[in-house]
Amino acid sequence: MTRVDAFPTGGTGAAEPTGWEALVTAALLGTDRRTPPGSEPGAGAPGALLDSAAAETVRRRAGLRPARAARRPDPAPEDPRPVLPADAAHRLTVLLADRPGPAAVGRRGSAPDLMELLPQWLATANSRGFAAPPEALPALLDAARGRTDLRPAVLAFAGPRAVWLARLNPDWRFALRATPGAGPVPPGPGAAERVRRLWDEGLFAERVALLASLRARDPGGARELLAATWATERAEDRLMFLDSLRTGLAATDEPFLEEALADRSRNVRATAAELLSALPGSTLAARMAARAATCVSLDRALAPPAIAVEAPHECDAGMERDGVVPKPPAGRGERSWWFGQLVDAAPLRTWSARLGGRSPEEIVALPVSDGWRGELHAAWCRAAVRQRDGAWARALLGAPTAPEAGGPGAVSLAERAKLLGTLEGEERAAWVAGFIATHGLSEAFQLLGMCGVPWAVPLGRAVVDALEIARDAGSYPWSFSGVMGLAERCLDPAEASRLDALLAIPDESEDASPGAGGYWAEAFQRLVTTLRLRAAMAEELEGEGSV
Image 1: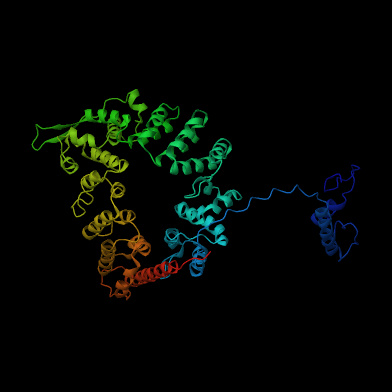
Image 2: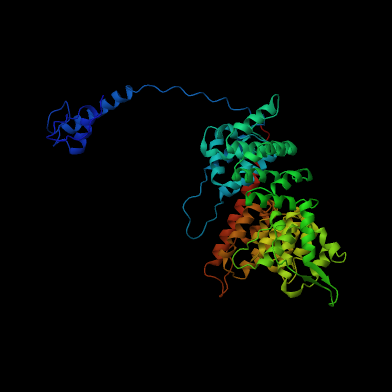
């Protein structure tokens, strides 16, 4: 049928609209001005218009030609892991259904925040090797789509079916980029050919996932695959691919990374330099050590001896090639900016030889001349984190009970938290417990986030004791809500019975914040309820799955 304008042009000899166009015209003008085709004017015209529209709709739909049938997707892969126990599966449904609503005003109440318990539930389920219920996979992937921190655990729990679903729904494409334990090309006959085909023909997300998966099990093969097409890749893709070499970084990667130092992209060059500086035995690290050593010396003429600093006067082409960024950020001097980059890229073993064979603790304790102490120690902090050097991290952290909380080298809470990340779990928890016992909770939130879950008993008790002290002092309770939220997720559930004495509303002193006692009681009630819920969740996951 030839399409005509829906409205009559009047006086031009144009044809009157027919069929669907006539019905649209009648609906727009009103049945009192335009009688629908096939009906009489009057009160029955509106009903006749709707009946005609319904019939015409069916006719138009029936007249559509069917589209070519789409190719049916391949069947979902099997997941051989044991099935989740029934009680745990029900608990997962409840946790996934607890979506955060509009921002609450005032108190949170005493009910646990179920969505915040999901990461811990997933960690426990993964540690016990259970498979995700198929019917829960869409909700799990939706949750991981909205919260990137959930993705590793969700994808491990979802298993190979996460990749299968991600190929069918663009909203879940993130699963193609990183699926722990389930690479895009499983090993088996013809795997090498399939890897090469996917690398040459796959989508960008699929190629990133492939490289990450291959790097985890065959670092050298992944590097060779990347090197084969490196020259033809886009700059932004080269940067993402290069980042995958962080997994399994070793001395065998050095020749490839040295070549990347000459890349035409500044960001690629900077990433290559960062990776090489994390290899203390690399030639780049040796070059940076030589440069840094010319800037730092021991002035023995002073009593006691002090560290003297002479920052570089220029950033030459060699420094730029090795990753030194020549232009400082706003408000930062050029020389201090260049100096910091040289020191944090130099192997930390450089300084014992350079400064009289002293240990890290002795070096950090030395005075530094001319106001360079903060810059030098901050650079050492970055180097200790990058090189995962526990001895230097301990020296820079200092004792947790020191009057200057955090020790001589830590320039901020963020630096302290990063330094803690280089220590083993028990040592980390013990340091933070000592810090809280000495300095309270006001600066401990970021440090607590670096500690393993559940918290070690000394750390958990230090937190509870500090919260009780804050309550008894009539402190403003809302300022501790972040620490209380961490305690709900991280405190050992076995500590719940110790908190029963804190559930009553305390007597409020005259200088206490109004209503503080009720808030504290409510917050401790929520903490106890959450701890007991976590204990129940762990017990449900103790059950044996069935296949």
